[in-house]
Amino acid sequence: MTARLACRIALIPGDGIGREVIAEAVRVLTATGGVVLHELPWSADHYLQTGQTIPPDGYDVLRGFDAILVGALGDPRVPDNRHARDILLGTRFELDLFVNYRPVRLLDDRLCPLKGRTRADVDFVVFRENTEGMYVGIGGRFKPGTDDEVAVQEEINTYKGVHRIVRHAFDFARARGLRRVCMADKSNAMAHGHALWQRVFAAMRSDYPEIEATHLYIDALAMFLVQDPGRFQVIVTNNLFGDIVTDIGGALQGGLGMAASGNLHPGKTSMFEPVHGSAPPLAGKNIANPIGAILSAALMLETLGRPEDARRIEEAVESAVHDREVTRDIGGMLGTREAGQAIVARMK
Ligand code: NAD
Ligand code: IPM
Ligand code: MN
Image (cartoon, rainbow, N blue to C red; front, top):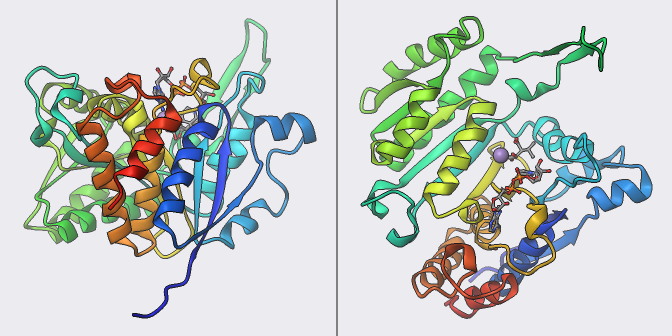
């Protein structure tokens, strides 16, 4: 057997429950082996102490790692969310992590909030465009704080940006043998920007004759996700809509604490994080569910070419969920740390 090189991972635990769930992801990664972890202090605390959200060479520092694992960023003491914009959104933009990959998979029937639905009904992935749309921060406020205030927030859709995420969704479906891709937009109301999504999707679908390519307006998608999630295999949508529908996806899996994600640029340093935020009301109480963070670490290992290690983690999580060795939000009695330990104990 040839020795494999350890993966170098940057850790950004961040704020609130981000710190607690990342500690459990670290426990699992340490049990898996083959990783060298380097913790970065970037967070609300760090910003409030130093005045710096991310150092000037911060994105270059991140590019020097094989992958990045983030907890969550967001703190009421930073009301404009400046540090989260620089650290989280900044990394998505600067490292050009154009694919936000958010799998939605129910691990146990009892966790689904929908009446009569089972694991077979909740198993799809969302590809969220991750580098443009409403998130680019173009705009401004004129006469702020007055009754004459004008606030402009531009949505940017580029041919390159739309094309590459739609292409990625179709290629993923083909590679996995999936048969259905659904693109969701709001082209009935957003007649300029989303006409571009329509054009790209219509042109590309003929490259994938074996795949049933459908379109839904985003409002109808939200409705069908609740009414009949089993119809979906691959969903592709823009940055803001993808943000919103993946919280619905979190709920379908039993709660936000279950949902994992990867911010990817195939072949380059990518960033992994649970879908949830820093949940200030839960922070510091050892009650947050660490599974979203742990499954994000598994996604990271899979992306780094270690699918066997990813499967080991996923199987241990499924087994712990099945036996209710989990936190209270999903019907267990354990704290965050104990839930992480229970998963490690089940790793074969
Ligand atoms: P949130 O995801 O932090 O929490 C919403 C609710 O979901 C919580 O109150 C809790 O009921 C539940 N929840 C979330 N994670 C959980 C977990 N691991 N275990 C159990 N329950 C969990 O969303 P929010 O309250 O809207 O945002 C709080 C802060 O986090 C804000 O500053 C926001 O900007 C930020 N945020 C950051 C990220 C990120 O870093 N990726 C993502 C979302 C929100
Ligand atoms: C997410 C989060 C972020 C987003 C926030 C913290 C800016 O909600 O990763 O889903 O909207 O992308
Ligand atoms: Mn979100």
